[in-house]
Structures are given as structure tokens and as C-alpha cells.
Length: 315
Image 1 (cartoon, rainbow, N blue to C red):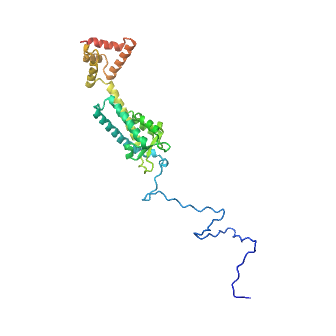
Image 2 (cartoon, rainbow, N blue to C red):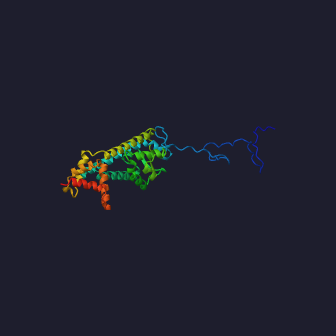
């Protein structure tokens, strides 16, 4: 009989289990913000929202770390050359100031070693602080260990001391050849190879514009040709007949000798040239041979040539 009231909700008998959801159906999700929103056992964890990227204000992607930039040493090779030029100008300026203060001759061989020591000290002091010299700072590059870590003072000392070797014989020919040999992943000069260092962009800075593939081959060829030209010039200078300057230097050196009062040094030079000793190499070889013969107590060809010239040119 209809009493006018709705049906009562069905209640499960005591001790019975709730009815299972149909196979393949998904459990109903709790409303957002609900305290009882618990994922059923075995379900995958909710996705983690991505962290905010370090993009710049212009939307550009973050700068990759140095060790993740492919061939970073090759990319900054074009910056190393002008940076080295700036550093050489700074060292040369310091040397010129020292020559002015102490009254040194700029091109005297006895003073040029000071310029070499200055270059070594300059690079060691600055690069041991943060891997940068004045030139490297200008082009946002620095010296790092090959594993990407800051280079230690010992490594900086090794590459600084070997810098003159990389510059030989002229215009960094040895250094460029070593960079070609070590490939684009390292681009190490001789000092870098032994110190386990290389030159890369400053960490955190934008990667410099990549160097064109023609730069290193061109620089290497030019430096090698310049070195060959220098070697030929030195050889020609040493084997060519003495010029007026060299003749004057020989006579001045002869006149500073202990027995110069007894001999005409200009006459001695003429006699030696007549005997076939016409070039700078010839005369230096003659003096070296004469010293060796004198040390052995012999009277060889060199001693005989000097004795003949002395007898002819005695005052």
C-alpha cells in the first residue's frame, strides 16, 4: 500500500563488503581541494609541474654550461688571437717603461729576457686569480682545466712558463700547430697540453660567435711562412759577406782585446777575409775553432790563420 513516502535507501547487511566497481572502470576522483583526495593504491603519482626556466627577459634559452657546449675551445679560437694581441701590447708597454726608467736599450739581447720574464709573470699572476688576463676579460674567455673546473695555480704556472716555447720560432707557429693537432674539442697549445688546460667561454656568459673554419689554418700557414722567412733571413745574414755595420762591430771588438795596441784590427779583418773568412758565421767559427785548439794545446788551421793575420798587421 502506498503510504506517500519515498522508498528507504537500501542498507548492506552487517558484515557484507561493498560492491566492487565494474572491471575497467576508473575510481571517482575527489573534488579538487578535498582533504580526502587520495589516489587509489597502484595508481601513478601525479605529474610534477616543471620548474621555472632561467630564460632571459627576452625569452631566450639559458646559456648552457661550458662543459656542455660542443667544441667550445674551437668556438672561441677567434677570440684568443685578439686577446693575445692585447696582452702582448700590455707587456710591451711595461717593458718600454722599464727601459725608459733604467736606460736600457730596447732591442739589446741582454735586456730582452726581461720582456720574456714579464710575459710569464703577467699571465701567471692574472690567470691564477680567475683564469683571465686583460685581453681574455675583454673577450669573455678564460683558462679552465680540461674537466671544466677552474685551473689550479700549478697548471697556470706550467702553461705560463711554456708560453715562450709556443711562440717559437715566430708568431706562435708552434702553438698554432699544436692547436691543429689537438683538434676542435681541445685546441690546446703546447703549454695547455702539459698543463691539462684549455681556453673556453667564461662560465655563465653567452657563447662567443663561433670561429670560422678558415681562421686556424690561415693563421698556422702564415705563422709558419713567417718563421721560414725569418730563418732564411738569419741564415742569409750569417752567411753573406760582412756589411759596414758588422765590419765596424768586429773592429770594435778586436780593439777591446788585451793585445789590440800591437795590431791593426782593420788590417786583421782584411787578412782574414782574404783567407776565406768572409761572413759572420765564418768568423765566429774561426774564433770557436781557435779557442778549442788553444785549449787542447794544438796549433791547428784556425790558430795558424790568426797568427798569419797578426804577423802581417803588427804595428
